[in-house]
Image 1: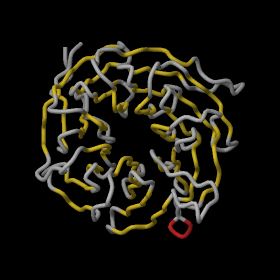
Image 2 (image 1 turned 120 degrees about the vertical axis):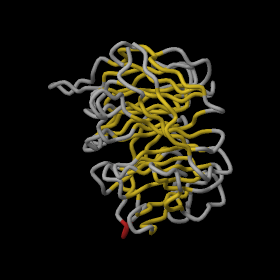
Image 3 (image 1 turned 180 degrees about the horizontal axis):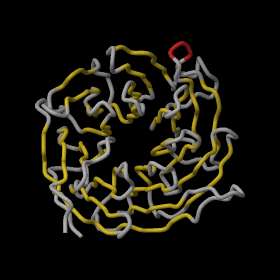
Image 4 (image 1 turned 45 degrees about the vertical axis):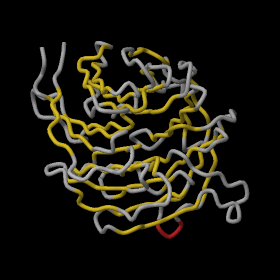
Length: 324
């Protein structure tokens, strides 16, 4: 099978530097964060900026949007984490995770992830741990717990499972850890990549985890927990075809497809059942962020996604049909 995805829309006022992360919200807007220090919300019909935050002095490197599309959490290169209310265009919280005068042993956050259930967010560190912080405005940034991986390696990405019960951590050495949030314990470790894992994405049912690595591969992991509590079977598929680092990935809402962005300046769409690429799009530069539209696709359509990368442009892509 092959699929065609068309460039349906391009933003009108691109970022002045690379886009490092991107999301498509439940309200059908797109949010992008950039090395130029800005965070922008986009109208997905016109490609115009609908609102933006004042520029930060350093790059914004990580983004996480609540499932209802109301709030966006973002983090800067120095570890300043902010919670933005997209409905009122107000800042609900700001936390300097690097400030050791406030918390002994404080570590600057790198990748951040809002818990879908609300109330908390996770942040990776340079020491291989995941910090859990309060996401409530009155106590925003208060550290509640620390999840220990046992490996002193930089955390490249973290993502909550859709039900908010687990958090996955990707590291610079290629290992992936999964923690149970209720118990605070490490439940699974996967060492299936040979180089740093740059991106994680969960399937909507929480049974699969897709990892994207500098080793040019994406690996699909079965992360289901059985009745006994034992983890799933681990790596079940390897997706190859990119010629350089894979920087970003996302699984479609229906779980049939995945999209990936790479330093080889291409975007690939994958059929997860067939374990094969079904579409390749040539971009103008490295692709640092990809995200599916969260709303279910129309009958006969493979859906739509948004991308951002080296050239600072946000681009919307839609399926041309069911493919053949």
